[in-house]
Amino acid sequence: MRIAIFSNAYLPSISGVVNSIMLFRKGLIAAGHEVHIFAPEYEGYDDAEPYIFRFPSLDLSNQLDISIIVPLKNLIEPTVEGVKPALIHSQHPIWMGDLAISFARSLNIPLVFTFHTQYEKYVQEYTPIGSKLAGLITDEFIKRYLRNCEHVVVPTESIREMLAKDYDIERGVSVVPTPVDLVKFQDIQPGKVRASFGLEGKDVLLFVGRLAREKGLDMLLQAFTLIQKQRPGVRLLLLGRGPYEGALKAKVAKFGFKDLVIFAGAVPHEDVPDYYAAADVFVFPSTTETQGLVIIEAMASGLPVVAVRAPGAVDVLTEGGGVLTENKPETFAREVVDILAVPGRQRELSKQALRAVKRYSISDATARMLDAYKTALDSWESRGQER
Image (cartoon, rainbow, N blue to C red; front, side):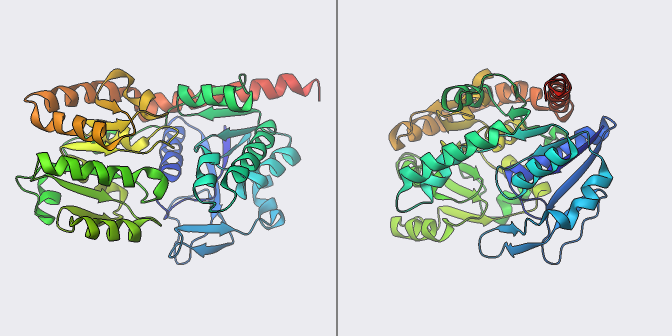
């Protein structure tokens, strides 16, 4: 089967969506399918792999970590038509998502869409004036987009329930968790990262993700002040970059934590497992995730997780491996300290994590994605008699 994936971002950009595309592409190719990716171009970057087609774009990666697509359909229309995909899989509801709708219609093939993000929450977070209205407009926009999709993929059961409640979509939805390349998390060693940051003999808390306000990082810093009082040797390692980085550094300096909070920046994805290995507890304060891929990666490293009770985290930690807390600094801090201080607690959660994470292997997740594709194709064929 030939699959065309339309995305607003791909390598060299690093994000949860990009990682999801890469891993599913790997699984689908291993299963004997062709995967063609249509994504923005990035200045100075050339693809090493075949079947990746780039759109002209405005490269804002240095300022905003994104490239804005120039959505001119005729620029790649011959390429898309030449691929002759069986279906189009859209990763975003705007820009490339609009083109995905247009090509699906003109080629008379089904459109599959992965609901990666709680879009209305992000829009409200980044709209300083009229955020509630912006959220309502976004909701209506997403509803219209979903009506153009033959099938919707969601990463967790919680997001399936949200689609039913908020968007009145109960049919044509498949739960397909984002996979993790479990092989990369075998035989990982903590020594290199601990040595490079002077963390020997310290308790290390790790956050991995985009440094953005909606990730709950203000609450995490408040919790860290409480944790530090009970565990003076603790360090907080932040891995990633983002628009809130400057504000976070200012707050860290204001709290007097300059030597206690480490901004590691962005690192190549193949190096990330070493950071998980170097930590004692993975901390995840975000309430806006649809799955929380980094939680799964932490579990694959045998790292206990403390996460705010929210969609994504609730689903991933259902079989153990971590603790869910209220979105309050006091309760979050208490759970972290408990894991660090209680003998055997860390070891038991680590064992649970390694058992639970096996269901996120690339082969298992890919098989579920192929089931979703089959459902979309069957539905499209049966509805063809009505169109």
